[in-house]
Amino acid sequence: SAVISQKPSRDICQRGTSLTIQCQVDSQVTMMFWYRQQPGQSLTLIATANQGSEATYESGFVIDKFPISRPNLTFSTLTVSNMSPEDSSIYLCSVSPQGWSEAFFGQGTRLTVV
Amino acid sequence: GQQVMQIPQYQHVQEGEDFTTYCNSSTTLSNIQWYKQRPGGHPVFLIQLVKSGEVKKQKRLTFQFGEAKKNSSLHITATQTTDVGTYFCAGPSQGAQKLVFGQGTRLTINP
Image 1: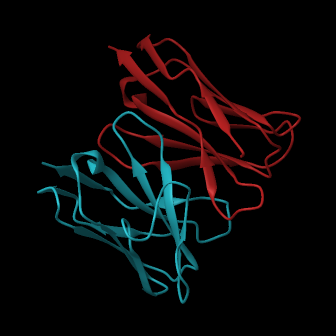
Image 2: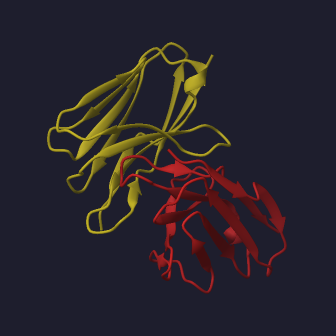
């Protein structure tokens, strides 16, 4: 299993600013995943963060808007840059320590951009 | 690309009624997983099915994996208010190291 500490749990930000979300895992994992979940919607994968290499972004998401850091095997950050109200959403980090048998999620960051 | 479709999108039941959500993948899956997300919470793993035709039970919840390993269902018998939430199915993507999630079924219950 894996326990993920994600912070902040929520924030209200001014448009044009940036917010960095942190995820700390209690064990070493190869890949960490960042998702966005808009109200009432499913999880949309933003990018996969690998330690020691650049993150892999999904279609529609770019590094300039969502830069990711992965300095070691237990930690990752996602920055939401130059925010607009359309970025208001829940952001979740996730890991699957044992292949694809089970995914664990952080508590989520509820972001509101005003 | 690979798609995982889930129906219905919403389901409202009276407490005590049964509930079923269905998941269908555009491609064969090596396994399928089910998650529950309570209102305001994060997704929590419920179960994984691996074998063709597999059926697993967790108390009032019954999970099935289709013979072709492309579809799955979750059935809840005699719903309780604690079952409220959104249920997601998910499967590993073919050719990419990630999970593909269904759209989810949001279950609400009238006590």
